[in-house]
Image 1 (tube, one colour):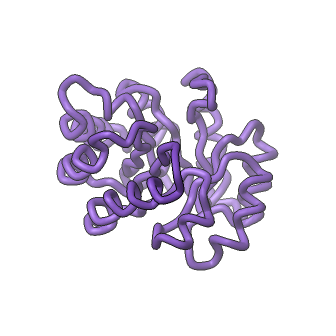
Image 2 (tube, rainbow, N blue to C red):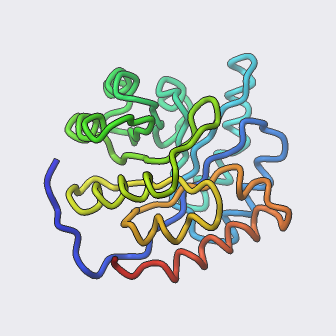
Length: 216
């Protein structure tokens, strides 16, 4: 994992969507969102229930996502990613990430979040992570403060080549995370539950990204 010294002029970050746990209506919402803005990747949080239900949910989303050029990633299921043609998986923590590498690599994307420390982030980077994510909610829905997430993003962006995803808990966090140096800004429930509709919220986020690309 090489040090990079990020250039003064960098490209505008791209959006990364995280679907709701409830699968109801997600396919249509995603289709609208993907038409509204440039989306780099979609992380699918799979519903509970039988394995067949999970596969059916994925099949319903795959066309909408991959046909628009976005990567389809599964939350915590590298085995299912390999079996269903998804582009990769997002793993939570160092141990889960390392256990998934032999399943995902080299054909598929292996991303990692749930990184409790700088050391954990460097460990997965050295192990071959395609990206690291900072600021996502825990299983209990708790997130670090924005200042802490921005600090971690800025540290990573300054030193390392591997892309960094900053998770925004609201649209107001998009610009600070982009300005801190995130290569991608992740958005979840805040856009899928937006009263204006998911497409309008995603378009709003994209506009904010476009004005936040100046280096700090």
